[in-house]
Length: 371
Image (tube, rainbow, N blue to C red; front, side, top):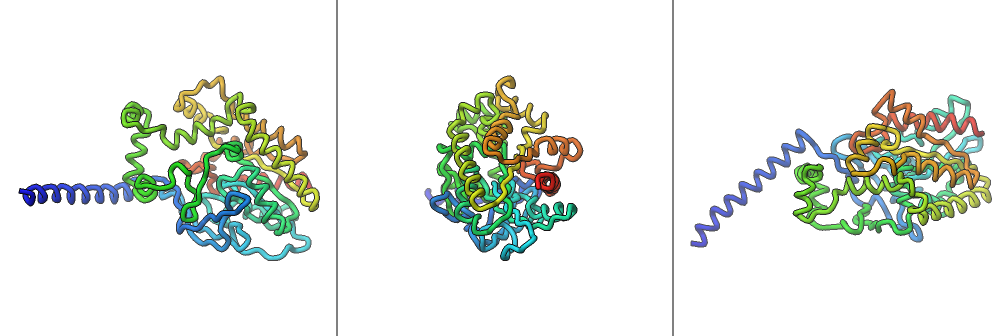
């Protein structure tokens, strides 16, 4: 009797497994699902008293399975790109510090705005080299801490502090979500393991079903299943917290932490005779009216309570207080989107090669005007 029951059950199980495998292959071929992957592990390493840094000497790839696949080369100094030599007299050494926009998620080492900057400066007769110290998920306090311990030894003539307006205040918050390093990769503490995390990393079928359940029409079903708000929605809602009219009060701990880090940054650069400037990098949602309005609607927010210029004003006030010359890339990128909507990746939302080219050109023009 037991044998008669096991045979049909095994047949069903095998059929189901084969069907899932076929569906997985079909999704990968027809509609690959975007999901950021860095391989192999070991990309990040703990860096006390800071949180983490890029692992010196790391080699790997970064891709989102739908839009880009790029080599990663971290040199012995922990910077993205080729090895660097000693400072050369007459050569302007520009160290750019910041987050994943500086690192250049989605483009090759030689396509980041840091790498493109020397050629743009050369057109104005300035010989320079660009050092890419972008580290994903860094806020200003992280950047200042890293520079104090690792950047000073690189002996830059100029430091460019690149600030991403979409989340740098969130990343500077003292009570931000804990991030763990698992196998050399960053993982939110609340989702550091389990079968769901494994499937999200490896299965396109799982991701497409998960994305389907994240559509507005499936919210009642998600509620009945006890599922929380989708990660993408939570992330977007978190970003919109910096656009709220009351962000100056609600994000005061993060603003204070940023203010103090800027003070330490300026003091240290002053002691060493290093020039410092800042660049404000806009989120696409800030400068694309259609995406702004669709996000407001999708999140169910009151448009009267939100303003895309809020983080710009906050950072401009902070940087002016410390007398840091500042380039706001918001206006040129807004104008650029009207001419070429491909400045940002569709899914990933980081800059494309075209975005990095525009940033390099604008930064070079700014630096020439301020030297």
